[in-house]
Amino acid sequence: MAFAGAATASVSACRALYFMDEEEAAPYIAGKSGMIVRSSRFLDLEMPREYVTSFITPLEHFFVRNHMHEPSTLDRAGWRLRVGGEVEKPLSLSLADLDQLQSHTIVNTLECAGNGRASIEPHVPGIQWQVGAVGTARFSGVRLADLLTRAGVKPAGQHVMFRGLDEVPGKVPPFIRSIPIEKARHPDTLVATHMNGVRLFKHHGFPARALIPGWVGAASCKWLAEVKVLDRPFEGNFMNPGYRLPNGSIRPGDSLTLENSHSLTTLAVKSLIVTPREAAKLRPGILQVRGVAWAGEADITGVDVSMDSGATWQPARLSRDRAPYAWRFWKHSLNLRRPGSYTIISRARDSQGRVQPASVSWNPGGYLNNVTPQVTIHVEA
Ligand code: MTE
Image (cartoon, rainbow, N blue to C red; front, side, top):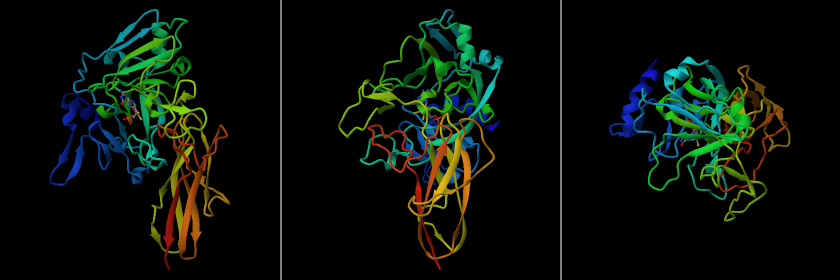
């Protein structure tokens, strides 16, 4: 209920949502707590690693990624979602219309494609996310496929474009992207109006957002105003050169073209060590290593832990909480009898046979950094 209220209040509160609390010299951001502010010009908030403690991420800790200003006014009564382009019967739907349609819920781990960019060498520009541009939520709303069926997609319809209501400053190109019609028609692809059981919070796209499960976060357009069926992929900055990976290896300075690169789709297989923390000082004894792992459209089939630089691996225990597209918690006990420094590495495996790699090829966007994580700890006598 608290968040439903916050979402409504934020409709008019606009950019005043971010300001410095002078007494505490800590940022206050409505509906959020304890986040790392990566950018305040356009709000970009990272979840600190220590908040990765529950299968469903509380909204107050869910990361935010905005390429531009959030809409300053969102008139709930006047808002319409238009569905048009290569369709027989264009639609114009109010929020009340969406609320009357059958609702579906998908638990999805949303990750920004640039999560982990901060540790890419050579350095790439962009938001310097460390590990916390990721979170798992219960998204509810209508199936995009149901809207497309109502509108009647013409045979020419190949891609589905989303336009949000972001406020585009100066010459910045608008955040518009498209996805292939097959993914748009997938029964798990939603026009979501709720997150974790409450109305979408404004930072997460109130009144409605696309939810493209298992894909990079950029596919899930917020503050949705238009869904347009196209006969080809949308051509714009956030489709090219944005959110593309080189087909082969590429060096800093080389440019990406439509021919030598492809658009990002599903997330990579990845694990994160939550505890122990880097440089932790511990006593000899049993150490519980805990973390999460996710794999976009694939399922996590295992996580292995190594204490000898990857020479040997021990399987970690996966937690019971699971859902397609959602991360899985894991844990592993280590018996650290002798004082000394130890490096722990984790490595995830998935149902598509992918294994988290020890190194990744450099790419100019710093996307999909899924290098096996490691922490070094010190056991003291
Ligand atoms: N949609 C709009 N309209 N504008 C944006 O800047 N950012 C995208 C996506 N949808 C964005 C957007 C990116 S890059 C990510 S990772 C996700 O939203 C983040 O969703 P969140 O802020 O709800 O966590």
